[in-house]
Amino acid sequence: MQTNISTRLLQAFLALADCRHFGHAAERCHVSQSAFSVMIQKLEAAAGARLFERDTRNVTLTPEGELFVEVARQLVADIESAFSNMSDYVARRKGRVAIAALPSLAAGWLPPVLADYRSRYPGVQVELFDAISDQCLDLLRHGKADIALTAPGTNLTEFDTDPLCSDPFYLVCRKDHKLAGKRRIKVAQLAGCELIHLARSTSVRQHLEAMLHPSGTVNTGLEVEHLATVAALIESGLGVSVVPELTLFQFRLPNLVAIPLDAPELVRPLLIVTPKERSLSIAAQGLLALVREKAGRAEKPAPKTRRP
Image (cartoon, rainbow, N blue to C red; front, side):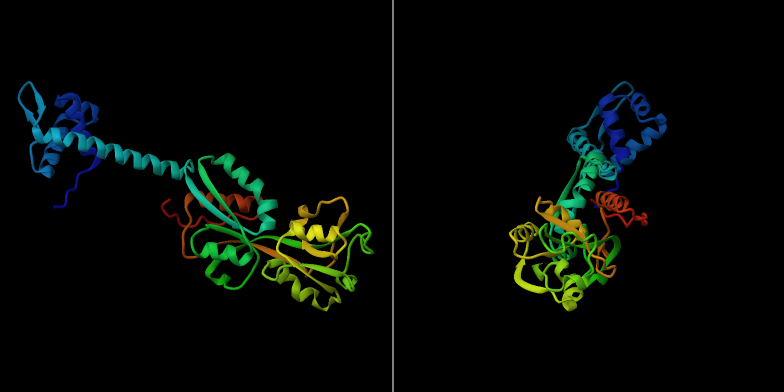
């Protein structure tokens, strides 16, 4: 049997169970006594049993009413709790958001953004994945991340993308290197330099490969995963490296210098990537808006909202 009982009817039942007086219960529910009587009749019809005994002086619960009163209290409490929780999610007092970002962003530009977000919405749990470009997209694809900050790659058509920033490149070398005194360096001046590379799986390496190939640089054979390792190898005199500006915090060592490359075409574009077919939670929408704000990007219309 399908039963259609509103919260209003349940609250009317509980008011009468507490007050044991139709007039007082109607007053508590802010309705007339006649309207209140109709509500109780509807509830009893839906329950298929009398829930109250009435006479001219007394209103008491029937045995069936006694059984139903605790059920009704729990139902009303659950409904109120559900709406209270939903209000918390809508106001970003609760929730969860996951963001995937390139290590260069996750360790430099992004932490102050996340700190600002947490100060605004301390009840929202933020999860961060620092990963290379392809892994960022996989996390987004499989629903483990809501937002990805990454470099362009293949298969981006399945996502929505928005520019984050452009990341120019720098030469990092020791202070005693022949190019260390230059204010800017052209790609042609890298000829003969022994290059330490990041691994081929990284977006930095993929972006540099075609641009530096004809420059006459010497491959040292050193290809590593981590920027800290690159810095240590350069400091030990094993070569130089070309890295994006956003990674320079890793190379703040007394014996190293960073010189901008005079190569407008050698710029790594970075993107804000979001699911195309999956709407974002309100918590994720808030973080996305903050990322765009900090990146100086115009606000886009809010994506459709999914339930938290």
